Image (cartoon, rainbow, N blue to C red; front, side, top):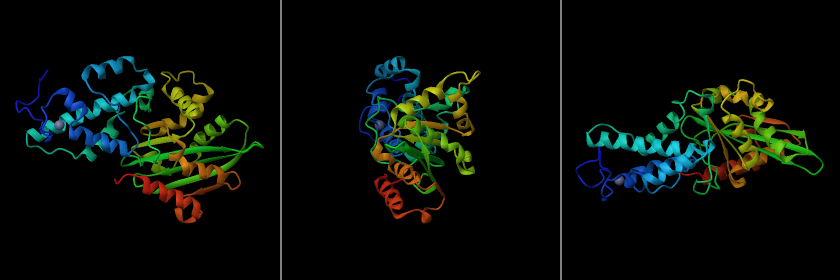
Length: 296
Ligand SMILES: [Zn+2]
């Protein structure tokens, strides 16, 4: 199939390779450059070598796990549009601009409430152990819970922008014996801290390192109808106020700042919107996350 493909055999992005569909979805330099930008923000594309592998993956993926394939398809589409613009001497975006536009638009076409939510899946490349900044004009929220043996617990939350700048950090102590419930309370505490910047952001990424809780939230958010909402759906309904929202599971190493807030919050309820009022240990982790973060 070469419909729409150029008569010039080599890929117009200078790949020195014949331009065919497999090339455009796997090893084209421009496709990979867009994928790299997305990876910097914590979105890893599935690795797909052929069209049949792509269609096969979509058919067998569960509804919960379609998110990465939607992004993959959108990357192919944006790369194709840019390629056509290039061939016709028109302006086309850099990989960074294309990646940002993918993030902006990925959910807007959907009209169902469930379509506004999506997440990561097992087919990904390994998740980064580093904290990743969100896309431009998005905000990333990290949540964590900490539990002591005496049922003393803390919940922590951080919000940062694309540059890793602190928007807000909060923590408080609670009494609970169930670590999963503590993690869930940390996520639910976000409703108390929604700022105008979060409500006006193009999107919010919520990350936590407790897989069970993150999966539970995703399943709740993806349920197709909220006509008779469960208690949990009511608890999470505040997330519908956000423009775009996704919930992701990340390794503990990438969630250290929220972990610090949960432990600090056990004994000191706090809300910081200015990093200068935070303790040195907090600033050290904030800086380490920045140092680990790719150059954006
Ligand atoms: Zn190419």
